[in-house]
Image (tube, rainbow, N blue to C red; front, side, top):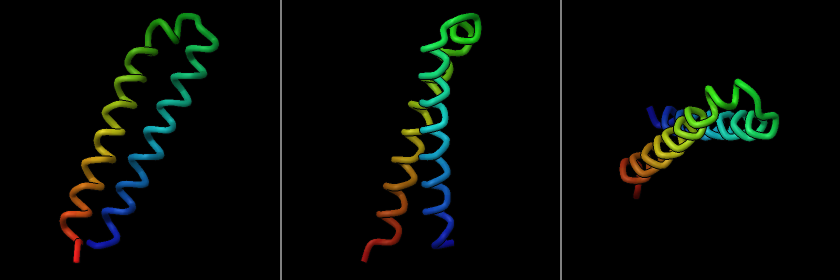
Length: 65
């Protein structure tokens, strides 16, 4: 259980970076994909960043000495 939180935190961070990069590339290219998914990608990034922070806080409160 102790190693589950760091894995989940890193996973959420990687997913947030992936959403960010996909959104930036989409915005730079423009076109139909950006019009359809650009805003959704940025919302997903914000949600994933919030999840990573929440997991980190829970981890710190759970395993503090």
